[in-house]
Length: 196
Ligand SMILES: [Zn+2]
Ligand SMILES: [Zn+2]
Image 1 (cartoon, rainbow, N blue to C red):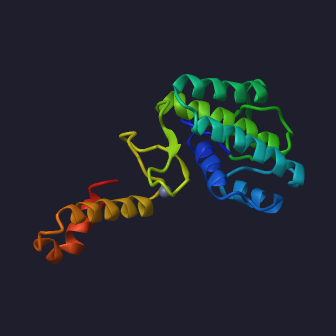
Image 2 (tube, rainbow, N blue to C red):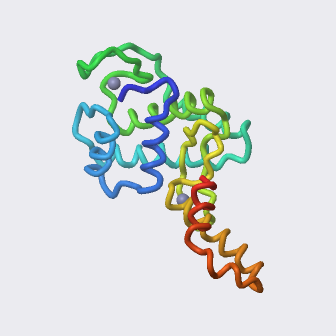
């Protein structure tokens, strides 16, 4: 994986793995490959354990109470992953930076990738740009890479769900008004598109 300057791919991969944990080492390998990681050796159960540990550490970063705590937790991960960065062209697809030692098993690669990617993402785009979906019963984590930095939902689906719910709540307040009945779909659609 070529880390882009904002660490976007790494945080998106971490969120994807937290939201839908891989069932076994094979699935972990496949999901990492899809995300653009070049795997240099077979993936083992140890890799899966190490990946789970990395994701647990990362979830604490997501759920940190404030910026100070968030930074401290990222720093702890960086310290654990510590290695000097180096230039490499291992896949023959162009020179890029690796923030880890060569020939590490996938679990360790993931740990440093997530640590460094998260640090780049937060420092580059803003400390607040990592959170859980605003829909209460949706626990999904997401990295906010939007232009405004005010993304509240993990997906369009959740944004729509919440818009419909807020619309209904408003409707109940005005229940006495019979006008409401006539204007369901178009005004729901309007509030959906306005809310993302
Ligand atoms: Zn690489
Ligand atoms: Zn959601």
